[in-house]
Image (cartoon, rainbow, N blue to C red; front, side, top):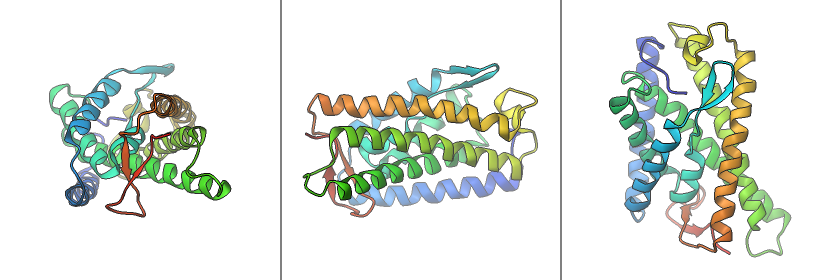
Length: 237
């Protein structure tokens, strides 16, 4: 999903970049309100770099890599996750030329803003539904948490894919195929591939959350979207 330079027209680049800057500014505001977890953020950035550099073949010329935004948001909260994702994407663009420097804002919007907000929102929503269905339980079960994380991860990939397709379709100076490496690619060709890619993201995210629960760790905490500033345990027994 890393768009190279020369894909989007200047107007689209400015609009997408402004949206990303606005989201990051809000993220910084929210992070300042809570307790910084810079150690976890640095670890998350390193993990993102590794995940983004490992391309997985999907079909023909199509390759993909794990995004990791939903898992990161579950671990350190959505706002710090956005800042961490921005750092990772900037390093990739400037050091490894994975994604263009001019399209950095657009790539951040696709993976770091839309992907994280949709994935984390879906995760929180699924947990809320699980809590209502099992009112007698003190908190959602480990299976519910892992399943919610997996669902959020899949939806984040689809939301990111639709955002990328929308940007290229509305403000692109090239074709969708040129972005993905398949010259004749169409929207109908791309979405099933992204859906399959999302299954891999969902599996890895769900397994990671389940592993954290199995190890009995209660150090991972998040900031609930509805309880800004209030920290609630997620990966705990």
